[in-house]
Length: 171
Image 1 (tube, rainbow, N blue to C red):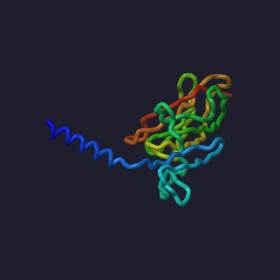
Image 2 (image 1 turned 90 degrees about the horizontal axis):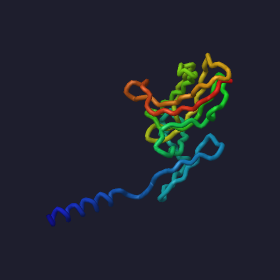
Image 3 (image 1 turned 30 degrees about the vertical axis):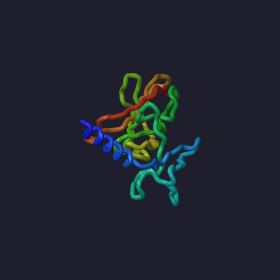
Image 4 (image 1 turned 135 degrees about the vertical axis):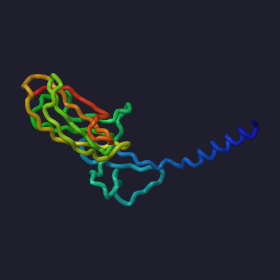
């Protein structure tokens, strides 16, 4: 049993030694700015702007800060209870498969009035910004509804995964 304990200590020590230092990049969105700034740790010194996506990617190079509470998608605009009319600009932050974000406008009965799809500036597990314009018809002025935003399953491209919604009023 003594050999087992010594072997375990050697194994744990080797595993911890292989972890390395903290060379992560932290992305922070400036207030009111559509672009992100970056700060690097542990001596990582980029020679130019740091991108959240590879240079060959078709995604924008703007990353976002993770959402607290393990939430994977959130709507930043419009605010809840806002009176909306068509088209509505929806923006927020998401960490979803392939960066695919779907925004849907629903009436008070849950009927879909309009839908649009966009790609966030980063893909899961990273967080990226999204902006999408949703054209809809059928909203009755003064009545309540919802704006729902979700990611989709990479298996079929349609099954909602993470989602977030806000209550709105139709203008």
